[in-house]
Image 1 (cartoon, rainbow, N blue to C red):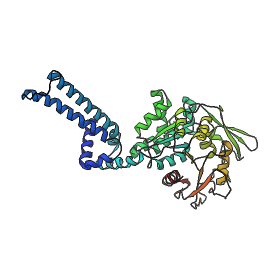
Image 2: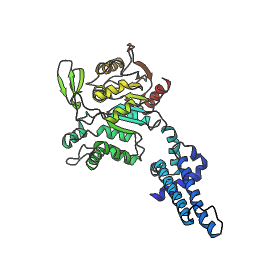
Image 3: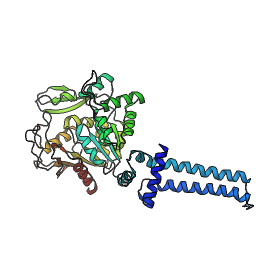
Image 4: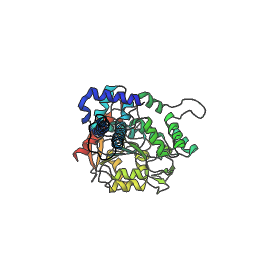
Length: 421
C-alpha cells in the first residue's frame, strides 16, 4: 500500500510538474514542510561534516547534540509531510485506476471541495437521484434520510434486529459513491433465494452487520462510506424508532409507512409516533450551517414529510439562512397524491409545517407521455399563487423513465437557484 502511494505520488509530480501545486486540495503546505525537513536534515549533516573537515561554525552546544537536534527536527518534518500528503491524496490514489484517472479526479476535486454546503432531505429513490447529480458539483453534501421505512428488507431487519431501516441509506451511499461499479453493484445486490436471505440486499445486511461490529448506526454509516468512497455524509433525521401514521379524509387511521399508500381514500395528514423525537444533532447542525436546503424529490407523504415531522428538523430549517428548495415529483403517486397539481404538493407541505418552509419549488416542464407504462399522471403547475414559494419550471424529467428526474438536470437547477438568488 505504501509502495503504491509513493509510486503514484512520484508519477503525479513528474507528469504534472508544477500544475499539481494549483489543485487547491492542500498539497503545497505539505511539500513545503517536507522541503523544510530535508533542508534541516542537510544542515545537521553539514554540521557533522563541517566539524570533520575542520569547518567550525559558532559553538552553542556540543557538535553531536546540535547535529542530532537538527536531524531529529528534519525527520519529524518529513514525517509530518508524509502524513499530510497521505491525508490529502491517499484516498484518491488508491481509488484511481491509473495516473490519468487520478489527475482527472484531482482536477475535479479542486472544484467540488469548494462547492456550496447543501443539505438534501428525503428518502426513497428520489433522494438518491438528486445526490448522484450533486456530487459532481460539491463534496459538501449532507443527506438527511427518513427512518420511517417499515417495508421490504428494511422493515424485516428493523423488526428482527431492532435497527434503523438501512434501505434508503444504502441507496444514498451508492449514489454518493466514487467506488468501482462492481463494488456498488455488490452493495445493491438482492438475494433471490435462500431461507432468511431472499429479498434482502447485500448492502442492507452489510450496514446492519457493521452496526453490530462498531456499536452504533452512525459508525456503521461512516465505515460503509469509507468502503464505497462516499462524497459527503449521511445522517438519520432521528435515532429514535418512529412510526409514520396517516389520517385519511374519511377519518381512518393508517399505521406504518408501507401501508399508507394502499387505501384508495385520500390522505388528510400524516404524523409520527412518538410525536417529539430528538433530532440527530449532526442533522440540525448541517441545516443551520447550510447554503442550500433541498426537500425531495420523493414520495410526499412517506419520504419527505416524515423528516419534517421531527420537530428539530422543521425548527432548524426555519432558523437557517439557507435558500430552501422543494423538488416536486414528475408524476403523481397512486394512493398518496392522486390528482395533485404542483400547487397541491406545496400546499400539503406548508399545511404540515409553515407557509415559509420553502423559497422555491422546482417543477418539471418536460412533456412526458406515461403511455400506460406507469400509474399516476404528470404533475403540472396550474398557475395557483403560492405566496412565499416561487415556482421554477425546468426540463428535469428522465425521458427513459418518465416518472423520474434526471440527476444532472436536478443538480444543475439546484445550483442555478443557489447561485442566482
